[in-house]
Image 1 (cartoon, protein in one colour):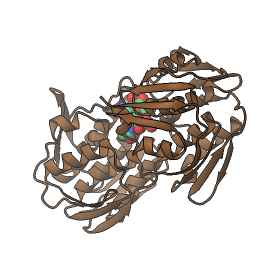
Image 2 (cartoon, rainbow, N blue to C red):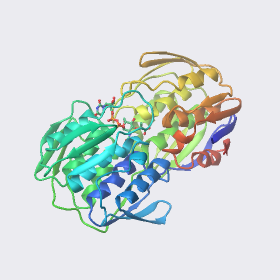
Image 3 (cartoon, protein in one colour):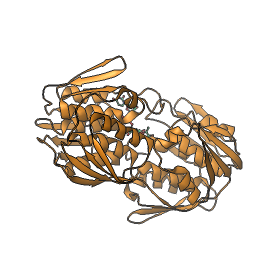
Image 4 (spheres, rainbow, N blue to C red):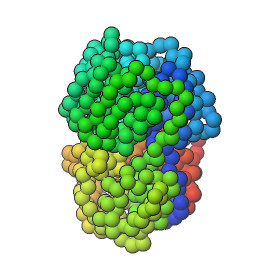
Length: 418
Ligand code: EPU
């Protein structure tokens, strides 16, 4: 079992390059299955969720050539099955996108029920609603989801809940459907826009991504030999912004999209942290105390749930009492037990954490409870006095590329032990 050892405290200072967005890449890689040909994708993050996805595609018949670590040519001319690897697809959440893309390609799909981070109940009824509205039958049996249809036909779909996954799956299934599909109450996250932009670059006709009404006019086929570069990762960028605040540091993010970070920048400004931005960079710095604030997680452009644990670390040493309300997931506060071990003063009531700032955190042996909680534990380890050990770091590797190298470049004393 690998673990991370961090000796703190460290004021994190320097520049960090932001990788391609995990949650866009996990939509775009399966979206390539709609192309009966080749495409080139750049800025693909080198993370374990993507590597698992590429392995699934290879088993389906894709030929994948790495031009370098982040640039791939995916040739889907020889995809021969609609059945996704049971073992691989049950290991991560985003494998559910194979349902929309295989249904679009073959009119049938078989995928194991997705796993991933434990954030409480994670139903996919809205994904199934999209497929059913487009004419497909879906059925769950023995841990697998089956979907099939003679011909997908455009439809009006009103999502009962704003769902990132259902919006992307609806887009994937509707891209090659006959006629027009309208998705209302759609999610608006930057990764949804990126999946739509990728498909449009390949010849799809999708309008309105980034608003709550998306119109997809089905096309007969997508073109071969298109090229696309994945958008920078909003949450990786936000993680380093919060690391600058928590460590009272000075970090400049390179290769990011400041517009996508406004929901985080504005909260940092409320905390008394300095934020300056240019075309593709953001600098976050903080010299003294930070203020307590109230935060409620919401769908984009609200404050992202995936930034909730990192924000809790920064607020643990803020002046005064902060509240943090989780409104997306049922269960996302397990990590607070780890921060309490480090001396934080946090009480959790249902979906609200109340954080009373303390002067400092102290090192401990702590666990990554999920991907974002794991990133938060790294920030906590950098801020705390003494030697912190972080266990269960495989969660972090699912979604952050070379995280310890990036923190090391900012001055952290961090080592991975295998
Ligand atoms: N929901 C339903 N039915 C559905 C789908 C969702 O009730 O059919 C509910 C969920 O239970 C949740 C809410 O709707 O309460 C929102 O879920 P959503 O579908 O938006 O989440 P997701 O697509 O499963 C993606 C990200 C998550 C991120 C959420 C919210 C990917 C692969 N995952 O999940 O990212 O927290 O959107 O922004 O894109 C992460 O990256 O660490 C991560 C967990």
